[in-house]
Length: 319
Ligand code: XMP
Image (cartoon, rainbow, N blue to C red):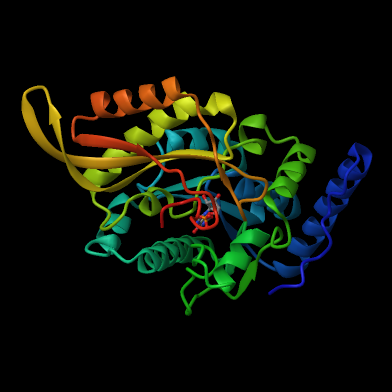
């Protein structure tokens, strides 16, 4: 296990602000020290990579190329939103839908899926780096990602999921010692919009870890719609994370017809740092509305279940 540096953000607002400011100065200095030429940053639009991108932009200016890989595993409208938010720092958007689907074809093992997603991201970043003549990759990896990957719980796509062979000569991870709540403090100190600083966490491998078994275009379309419905209904309860996943198939009846359709699981948890999580006791009428909306608005879904498992023994995501 790592020796984590002391938490940067101790209680007390003035200390928080001061420590976040100090962290920002240190991180900028570290990035300037490590990156000699041009660098790529993998920007997913989540709070971690956005904070990291802003730090790197302050450190490197035009020597930084933020790359958003549109993997086809993102939520509804997510890609356009990210492109719009980061156009001012020169975001490059790469459409890689087919590439990810092709790479994931026939793969059912969760760890293998994560490794494939991690590797595909890296290959796209390498191609973009070659185009700009840079050999450095900056990533928004945070402390819990490293702990879970190295503790053997799961290979977070940007740590254990990285391929053993990479063209990059340097990998810079300025947030590696921070918990999510600390990253949010830094985001606020950087004046990032609330839409980013308070953004619900979303896994790098995206919807692929919310699909049990093989990832297909059909399942992606279903889980994307179901996720949007869950977010619409649950965000007002301020969950740590709320989402939908596809578990498999089951029999149901719609109208007068028997259907053999998808089973969608709804998950909504509260947490402080994602290391542990509690199931949220959502009002019954909200759960019923989610169920009837998902089965009503997505014709191929036969059933909706609510996941009652805390972490541990479950994890937050399904895979
Ligand atoms: P688990 O499922 O391990 O998730 O309880 C803990 C937190 O991490 C997010 N998560 C990931 N984030 N790459 C990421 O960037 C990943 O591979 C990954 N897997 C899980 C998850 O959404 C939760 O917030």
